[in-house]
Image 1 (cartoon, rainbow, N blue to C red):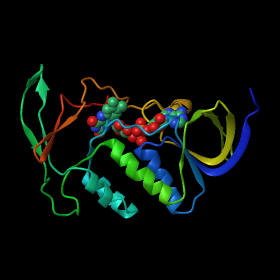
Image 2 (image 1 turned 180 degrees about the horizontal axis):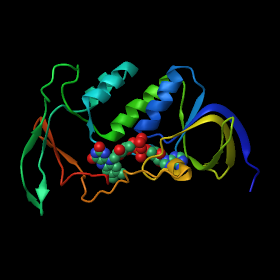
Image 3 (image 1 turned 120 degrees about the horizontal axis):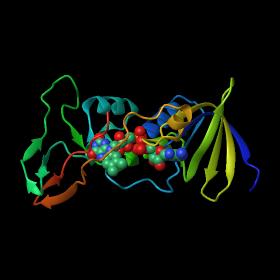
Image 4 (image 1 turned 45 degrees about the horizontal axis):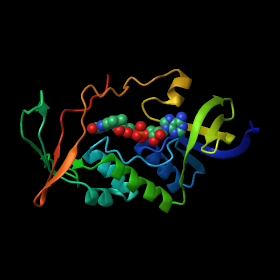
Length: 215
Ligand SMILES: Cc1cc2nc3c(=O)[nH]c(=O)nc-3n(C[C@H](O)[C@H](O)[C@H](O)COP(=O)(O)OP(=O)(O)OC[C@H]3O[C@@H](n4cnc5c(N)ncnc54)[C@H](O)[C@@H]3O)c2cc1C
């Protein structure tokens, strides 16, 4: 194996999901030198998280991306939970009835869209997600962190950084290395695979049940 190459930067963000993308964009907006890596070769197109709350939209507004996200989502959906393969109810989600926010609704938007908008925003700030680059391990010392990375072509690199941000999701290498595994390991006890169908001009989302995380 080749000797790992060395690189230096201020912050290494591990994981380019919504958390990592927001962190990397906020660092870039403040002129902090940083890198963001993700081990996946391409951004996921799976829907996963479906709802963005008003407070999140308020924060995304400050970043200048809320309007684009709202334009890509829906403020109202109809959902039909199924119990034992039979429709149990017809639910409608829309206005949440508050007037102290510019976003008085639940925004239904696929996580894939959210990530697309955030990644575009990050690139507009001059930064780019490095893929596929995986964090293998890291060690901290008084001055910073040495992180061992593996690129898609097998090349390894030791990145020397002042700070390492673990935004690497539920099975986080960062948290496990630090000995603080997540208490919210995702356990889709029942699956929620929304299928969107067009009914004339109306689009509805069918959900067979809800996604839950273990507390
Ligand atoms: C099947 C599924 C369905 C879901 N449905 C819902 C839902 O209906 N509603 C809801 O609110 N939430 C849902 N979730 C949860 C939601 O997706 C998460 O809350 C959200 O993705 C968390 O964002 P994040 O940025 O913290 O982590 P993630 O989106 O998990 O991003 C972590 C990123 O880190 C990368 N990564 C991991 N390890 C490494 C490493 N060692 N080196 C480099 N990169 C690494 C991964 O490739 C990934 O891109 C679902 C999740 C799954 C898996």
